[in-house]
Length: 115
Length: 113
Image 1 (tube, each protein chain N blue to C red):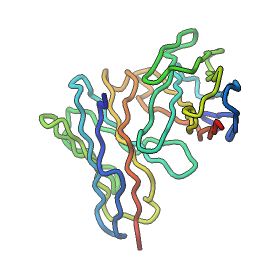
Image 2: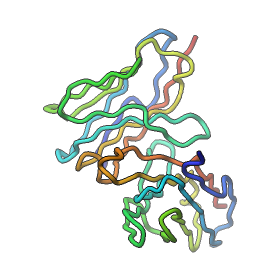
Image 3: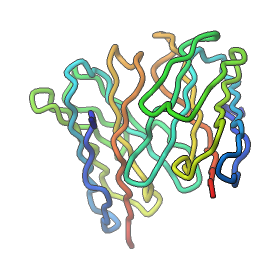
Image 4: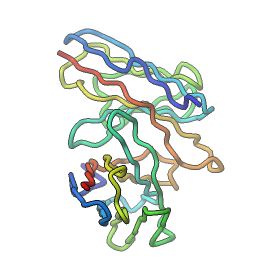
């Protein structure tokens, strides 16, 4: 029962470098999300995908891009990393089926430091 | 604009005591209010959730109290245990949870012996 799997767990980037955070879920969920967590700020939604082939901006999308590669996978890309993007990133998924409940399942997080 | 306000930011409670965390929301379209629990180094996990057709929901030692007119809801942890030490997030969503969640800023709870 893997649930939501994120890679990498830890990453240090230099300002201006690019990288992609990978996320996969094995629960056959329709909706997937990327959040960032910062001290005193809670969890803020970066991008989400309500279904395969669709993506939408959340609260804090600037500096990020996403790809919903297929139903299982939803990646987050930083094209030119900035120190303000130092954060813990969480991928999450939800069934989006009224019969399956409203629970969002989170991955274990990716700690990203931009120096 | 913060749509869900959570307090306190941190809380220390003695073992066996009652831990209370409060949240207030602004958007009257919200109709699904979950609480998530997060241990260090882990992702948040659903603890308990309530819909506004009831004023209280209890699961074991955890209770959500909901006040629709005041637009407030709270988490009560009875007989708090050291294993309850974690960060707690309230959240809210519209369309019975089928819209994206808006989270509070979190409360770090520490239970001391």
